[in-house]
Image (cartoon, rainbow, N blue to C red; front, side, top):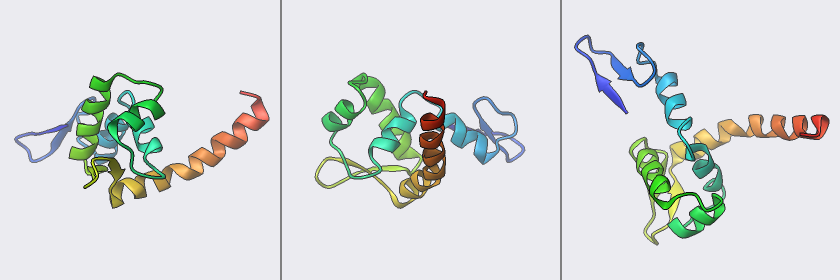
Length: 112
């Protein structure tokens, strides 16, 4: 995800600053990343159940995203074989809830 530069700063794709927010937004902006986190917010899911929840997304892309999210510390593979959120992943999803509530209000007012 990030590369070390000679000056001690970490490079982030799309950013010369290496700021953590840029790394996070880059990861979350990748196709299916947010959807995976959202679908795992309530309970762990197997790969198949997660694929179904994600509208039959490509299994290859889902596995790549799951690997990235695991490496970032947001998702873990449970003992039963299902994927679930780590404590940090749950914290991240909790930060989405005000945005989710806003989106629900916006949709009801705008008819979107």
